[in-house]
Structures are given as structure tokens and as C-alpha cells.
Length: 639
Image (cartoon, rainbow, N blue to C red; front, side, top):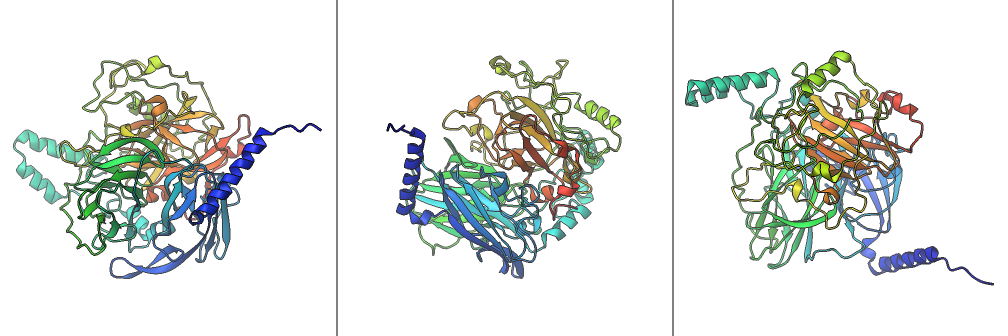
């Protein structure tokens, strides 16, 4: 009898055999974990406070996984209310994502006394993290790092490996902190401008014209009910900033030997804090962003948004300690660790803070909304008629913007006003992008050929200058190189790159006076799902109409910011959208199901800046998308 050789079966058998042998050779990298969630007392600021621990640890234990194997993680909840763990940045089935209210069969998470088994294939490598998906537990310590070993050798050499997990702690219960913000959005802003500072500024003004400009500036900000010093919603007024759970006064010590190449896995697990990271005396070579390898880029400093990860390599040559300094964006504290040749090295003093940043009206070019309070009239996410391609010969301020980083077209304020007039007082409009869908012409190489840095509206008029959506001003000294998204170029061309299929516009909106955050003017519990088609490449045009940064995160799929580099744009799981700017981001829609889509500032998510991102097959019924989302709202997300 003739036997047919099954090549596919043979390859599967060889792969399984190799996996088993590799697992036997390195049992320390086992894929099975048991995690127990419980409340324990910690003392960060001199007073005992309840924290959420994982296996008794604060923060939780490092999980080491291996690409190509299966992870089996049993989570037992020993607390008196439901909890969850979301595997941040991991590509996995929707049922295993761990976001209550989204994953099938996971509407309320892991209940008290229950055990839930997460089981999923590990299809990537790099630095990630896991955390609870509710305000109370995540802010109180339920977060920890994940390191996934690659199946193939790394494209860079290192001698030592350390996790640097940035976070913050408050002695207040998170619900109380949120209540404080709703009562007064500047509650934790101790740097607010006052009448005394106005008098001081007027006295220092060199001329009557300068004094008029000062008064005019104050009136403009007062009309918007905002403050240019409002850089962070929650500050060092209540936060203590940590690295690996250690306070800056007693920093974590990361050992090295002179001449070693030390890999630092930077993870921002903060709830609300952006950090500017530098290591005086050392250059940092960035080799990974959000778990993905990039072409190495040498920088002096980087800003890490909430929930991002960066892997950097440093080469300390001297047998002395080097401070890893992480300064909050608003300059109200420090997080730090230290690289040292021995554990007993004396702790060095912290340096003085850099000047705190202050927003200007140029940062707030966008329309403030119809009342000066609500930044964003409720409006559905609809397909856009086409890309506003940069036109040549237009000035766009001091910073060049490659194709794809488009400014908001002029006339947008009038467009919003017309929308508002057509929908007076309307909340919760259907957000189904299939409605009124118009196919978008695919961009060609000629579309990207322009050399200018402006944007034109449909009539060809140039838009006003707006802030650079990519570059960060961290206060670094002249000549210092600060990491930019433009520096993030993958080692190889993205094999799945192609022009986008259509565009939807997602405006990041909010009411600062009432501390309500939204997308397109709709809070989570009033809005409808955003519906995408399985297999499409969907372009999201983010337009930030607020004065806050928003680190936008989509579960289960990669996002690709359009930096004008085509197939060499980076894949990220978090994309930061700066105040008053617009940025196009492509989504590889390759995972069916309901996924969480939200701002990763935890108090913004809890206050409404979140959506269901629903992926369906072409022609699949989406009747449920016409139902209000209130019933689907997970417990703990309604305010």
C-alpha cells in the first residue's frame, strides 16, 4: 500500500518535539503560573494602607513566557469583590483578554473566591505587563511585568537584564481621588495661577503692551475654564512615585559590572503619570518599543507615556553608581532606581527639578467647543471622505511634519457648530461607521510626494499652525537627543503593510469642569460600539480637542501611527496623542470579537473615555450595535 507523505503533519510534529525538548532544557521558563489576588497592608508613606497584591507581592511577580508555547495562568481571587487581569499588549483570543464586560463569559471578571484559568498561545516576544482593569485594584498595586523570550536569537547582545517598572502610589482610596477631581479638576494642581501671580507678572512686565498681553492671556484661559499649569490631573500632591515598588529615598539597586551591556526594560505602569527618563552619564540605546524590535537609536532622554514600554541598552564603564531618573511631566516628584556595582553603595542625592512646563494658547489651537466647557459635541464616528494630504509650499511652524501627520483642516470649528445645531443636546448617537460608508480612495505614492508641512482644506486654504504631534519637549539641555516616535523604525518592513481601506475620525473630548472624558463627545455608557470589519486596515484619525495628553490603547490588535514611513512605521499597543494635535493611526483589524478601546489614563477611562471596538465579519449582523451600552458597562465603570 502506498503511503502519502503529509508535510504539514511532519512539520507540526517536529515543531512540537522541538518545543518539548526546549522546555525540558530550560524548566525555569515554564508556561504555567498560579496567581493569587488578595489585599495586604503596605506602608509607603509612613502609614499602613491596604494594597492589592499578587502572590503576596507589591507590585506583582514577573512572569516569564516563551514565544511559540502556550501560557496557562490560573488566577484565584481572595478579595471581597470581583477583579481581573488584563495581559497588556498581548495578542490573544478575546475570551482570554481579561477586560470585564468585553470578553465572552467574563462579564464581571473573577469573582470573590473564584479561580479563572487563562490559556492562550504566546505569539510574540518582548517586554509587556499585566494589570487589573478597574480603578480600585490597578491603582492600589495590581500590576506587574511580563518578559517573553523570543523563539529566535535577539538581534542585539546584552550581558545583564533588569526590569524598571515605573508607577505611583497614593494613600487615598482611588474612588476618593476621582471624587476630588469631579468636585474640582484642579484639586491636585498646587501650581495653579493665582491673583498673586497675576500681580507679580504684571509688575515684571516691561511695557504696557506686555501687560495687556498678560491680561488677555488670563482672560482667554478663564473663558475656557482651564489653567495652563494643568499638566497632570493627579500630581505629587498625593502621589509617591515608585520604581519596582521602591520609593526614591530608598531606590531599587540594579547591579552591573563595568563594561557590561545592560538591558533595561522600562515599563510605565502608572495610572496617570508620564515620566521623562534619563541616566546622567550614560547614553541609552533604544532597541524595542512596545515589545517590538526597532533599529537601534541612541538618545539622552525619553518620555514614556502611561502603559508604554521601551527596552534600552546602556554600557556603564566606571565602577560607580548611575541614577536612573524618572521625572514626572509636571515636575512634582521623582521616581528613581540606580545602577550600582554593589548593593551597599551610598545613595546619592536627587538633583533639582527642571522647570515645570506651561501650556500656551498655541498648544490649544483646537476649538474649545460650543460652551467653552464641553470640548466636543456628541457625534458618531463616521467614515471620512478622504485623507487631507499635506500640500507643498505651506509653512507649518518650527517642526517638520511628514506626510500622514495632518493638521485639522481649517473650518473645523464651523463644522462642529453645524453638527451641534443639527443635534441639539443629543447624547449617544449611533457610532456605527458602516452608516453612510463611502469608499476611500487608496493613497498612492504621489499622495506622499509633497514636501511641504502644512495642510489644506477642501478649498485649498492653509490651516493654522498647530503643535507637532510627535516631538516631546522634556526640558533637556540644548544638543541632547530626546526620543521621538519618528525614531521608531522596525528592523524589517512590515509584511502586512498596505494602504488603508477607510478612515474614521475619533475626537478626544471632555468636560474639564465636571471631569468627564469622552470620545466624539460620547461617554462610554452613552455611546455605541465602533464597528470594524475583519481583515480591513482601518485608519483612525485621532483629533485631540483637549489640553491633556491621551495614551490611546486598543486591546488585541496592533496600532500603527502613520509617520510617513510606509511599511517602516512602527507597531505599538499604545499611541500617545498630544494636546491640540491630530495623528493618523492604522489598525490591523485581524481579531474578531469585542475589544476595549480607551485612554490609558486610568481616571479618564473610568470617567468615560472608552469604547467597545467590535470586529465582525463582512455581512455579519450588527443589530446589537444599535443598543445602548449601559447594560454592557462593567461594574466599577459607571460614575
